Structure formats: structure tokens, C-alpha cells
Length: 465
Image 1 (tube, rainbow, N blue to C red):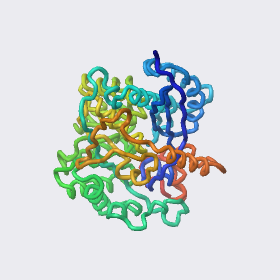
Image 2: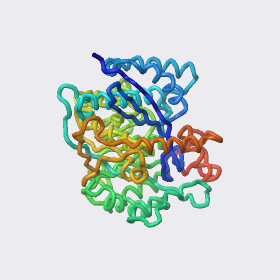
Image 3: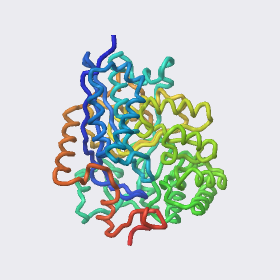
């Protein structure tokens, strides 16, 4: 007998964020997310967590009602109808429904499928008494018992006096240099080095790869920062820059060649230096440095095209949210295993439910050569009321796979509802936090800042008048 879906619910929430800079702008003090919850007839519960925009809310509000009363086993095997119906609704509602070129995703269908699949699969795993990874891994179950993460760091804007509410994030008594610097300005090589050293010493000790978000300063200044960072951390720590396609091809080739000459094997790959697969292929041919993307290969067809063109050698498309669910991320890992492309995972501002799904996906993935990105451990873990019992981050960025059924964390629904009330309160008299948009906070802090689409040079500071 099929296990019936008794309830399928979702809540838009707001989570605290820091003054992180990127090519597309500045993170606002709050970032919207969506929590999904699937409850089966026997009481088993599963959860998902995805990015939030008004299009997803509108489409998901229509789709979830259609799932109640259906069999969870059957629905997990036929999510194509969710994709088709989401695309139809997005077109009917005239919604943007694609990856786009910003550092954040305005897609609807990919996230809607992910939110449904993540909650369905974790509920069914709970029903079956299995850790989610054993369900995702198919007949062979999980492939590994631990998943590794890197440290993901950013330049930080000077926001004092801006009127934006980042000050509530400042701890009264910082536990260390990282917590102190996390609410200060980080915009030069010296601060970059101190901040990364504090992150490795106090938050993620033993981690062997530091990713830094570029596309903010002039490329020459960013080259100086990355060389200083690599030399300060030493040969045991690799450095991966990510300018979110802020550079043109000649700039990217020049910076990457000089960085490779300066730091050698400490540069294992470079993420999204330029826009588009053809440009990525040109940069790789000229430099020989492996390139990775989370921007230009949003689906399987694009991955195949990227492989044909030699545009990317590593995909960060193992992100459960952007690829459409943890099952699709595991399927992509199997494709990577046969195609020879490296497999990794991109992340964005998120909480514990997303982190848990990433760990289970990584445990079930066919390959796991590269540590996964995580905003969670350096940034959001201290401000997460949605979980009563969380996973632990061990030395070296290791998360061990839980043995309990489902996700292996205890979700705190009172915390979810508190963040949902924050969403409702902040959007009651306007729409400031219904969609993530890094542009308006940048305009507030930097007065007259122009979006990258309106100027020839795309990096952030090129838009400051």
C-alpha cells in the first residue's frame, strides 16, 4: 500500500545575513528563504530549504495542494510533472524562470522542484527508517561516511551610518577575532589575510581550501589580495577565487596566469572568471588552469555542452537547490564519474536544513573529490533557531553522516515560525525582503552605485561613483 502524503506546507522566512560584497551588490541584513515540510499519513516528517522569491511562493502555493493525498513513493518517481506544471504556471504568471547572470538565482522551477523533492525524500527516508543518503544512493546506499567542506569568505562592506540594520549581528562579547572581524570592514590585503587566518583558527580549523568571493575590487587589487592570502596561509592551504564572471577574457587570462605563477599548486581551480561557456573555454585554453562554474551550467544539457567545449573541468552544480533537488545532484555526480568532470557543490546563504541535505547528497554522490562550499559554518550557524540538534563540524571541515532516519537533525518548528513572523513583519509595509536583491543595499551604502549590467566594467567598485 502506498504511503500517503497527509500535509505539504511551506513558510517563507528571513534569516540574518552579513554585509557580504559581490559583483551583483551587497547582501542585505536579512535574506529570504523558504522552508518546506511534508508530513505522511503515519506521522513521518521531512523538510526542505530553498531560496525564496515571490515567483516560487506563487507557484508552490498552487502545486503543494495537488500533492496531498498522493502516494509518496509514486511522487518521488514522477517529479517531471512538477517541473512541467511549474514551468506552465511560471509562464502563466509571467515570471522570470531561469538562472540569470546575477550572483543569486531568480529561478522558479528548479527551486520549486528542489523544495518538493527534499521534503518528500526526507519524509520517505524517515518512514523507511533510513538515513536520507541511503535512500538517495539507490541499491548501493551511501558511498562514504563523511563529507568535507571548505571555508567560504567575502570582502565586507563598511556599513556604519548607512541606516541598514547589520549592527544587530554584532556580539556584545566576541568569542574571537573572526566574530569580531565578521562585522567590520574587510577590503584590503591585510584584512583579507587576518580574516582568513581567524576563520581557519577559530571556525574551521584544518580546512585545506579557502574560497574567496572576488568581483569586488579592481582586478589588480584582488590579485594582490589573493597572492598575499596564499602566501600567508602557506602551501598546505589552497585558494580558490570566484569573481562571478566580473571580468572580460583578457583580464581573466592575465590575472589567472600571474596568480598561477605566484602561488603554483595553491591554485587548484578558478571559479567563474568570465561570462558564458565560450569565454570560459577561451580562458582555460590560454591558462591551462581548471575552471569551475555554478553560473553557466544550470542543467544536464549545459553540462554536456560545457564538456564538449572544454569550458569547465569542475562543476559546482551539485547544489541540491539549483539543480532541482538532491536526487538530481546525485545523478549529476554519476555523470561526472563517467565523463571525467570534477564534482563539487556551490552554496549560498542558508540554514541547517540545507546543510543537512548537502551532507546526505555528498554521502550518496558517486564522487566527492572537492570539498563543498558552505556559507553556513562561517556565517549563519550562530544565528539559526530552526534546529534543536544539529550536525557537528569537525576538524578539516568534516561533517559525519548521521545514522538516524531522515535528515538526522531535529528541526525546531517554533524557530521556523519565528523567522516566518519576521518575514511577514518586514514585508508588511513593503516588499523589501520578498526577493533577494543585492542591488538596493549597495545603493544605500555606496550612494549612487550602479548595477553591473549598466556599465562596461562589472566588478563592484567600478559602479561606485
